[in-house]
Image (tube, rainbow, N blue to C red; front, side):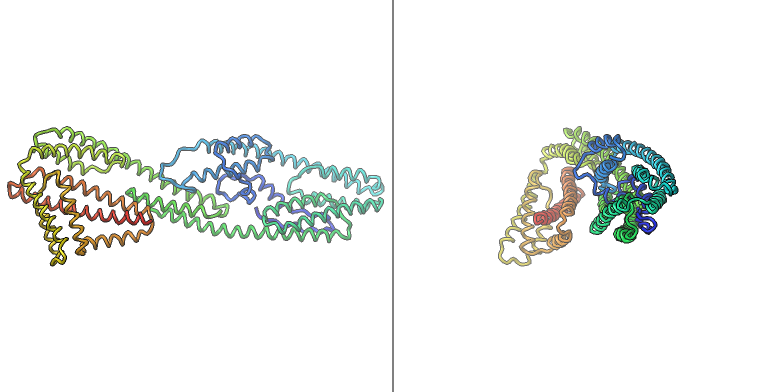
Length: 614
């Protein structure tokens, strides 16, 4: 609502001042306005201040709103405004687009919101009817006041009997004042006519001067009090509230009779000066708010453009969608910090911003749904492979069954991921069936056990040499010796299945000690570089946990590869040159995988250490 200046009417011709008709009309317009959008800037300062202080649930708000809607329209306006403000606050907290967006699919229609809209529509309908009744009443009041004015004018025109009409004149004045409001566009002219006929009556009235002076004195006291109250409004920090109170003072001024002609202008100028001060502050307040709203419009437009610049067609993974979600949440937080834009664009900007947010989360939900369906399909495929492996695990046709299990394992690798809650269980079920078969096969293929035991002794000898090197005070070229022993280790064949983990761990421990003692930088350089990368993540525990999860998946992948290679080793013998070549190649791959596992373990230790520091 734009501020309006007090009409500059001289007290000499019209002893009482009033706001012009535009002011009263603006007030009526403001009173009849309703807020239809929680972020629309139709809310005034007093609306915001009147919001409920206590937290209420939607059900409590709807219960009170349903009761208030049926109450007297002119008495429940503020109560309904409070309930609407509380409801939209709850709604805003639940909504991710302007409150907070979530990873969940878009919710269905809210029954509470539908009920709220129904009650709000019912209140608007009752209020519109009330306003129509009020306007009809105002028109009737205007007719009554005009009729009284005609009677007053007739009294003033009858100059011969004017003294006899004093009591009748005062009675008509009381009746005039007792009549309620009239249409805003008629207020000023009606009051001017009333003041003119009143002044004419007193000017022509030949009654006791003491009585007339008493009326003037009484009116002067009232107007001086009104001046004092108007001047005190200048110290009110709430300019909207001060302006509203000023309107009430003007209404009282109009209802107060005239004062002595010689002081009419002076008392009017005093009241006018106080009113002008408030009007100027009110005007400045709205001009400042308009400027801020323009800034908010530019900022909100920029946020819409940034949001719309996100290319959802490029989001092809969970990580990509999660990253985009964080970006959108950040934009939503920025939006929440901005105030209202100009009324004509505020709702449009909100709709534009919300539309893109809704589209994003709808497409995200669709993507997650499709991935969930794919994961479910993958789970069914893997369960089917588990059943095949379990059906073969007790077979004694070692060659044929081994080929079939190898084919099943290859097929397993071609199937995509499944939900995390099923991943470990289905994998354990599958690998247990495979391991059981190959363990039984190993028991039946004891002919290669001697060679495996020989390999075990050879590996123990390498470990012993590493330990001797570690115990030596000043060995010559230890790094080269360590590498030579490591190459020898890789050249040694398979060891007994039950011994493989223990002997490898013993070997790995000796190698680690050798790296540390002789400053062999191959692994250290990699770990040092990785430590630098981890440091760059700072103290962000979320990023550290995501990094740890990533390398753990790599670790599990390599463990699975290692198990596969170790199982496949059981399918070959070294009786032929080709068989021996394949065995050595597989053993080399196994050694490389074990070294990579060792490096990954060190990286995990670096992350865990960083997490403990934070």
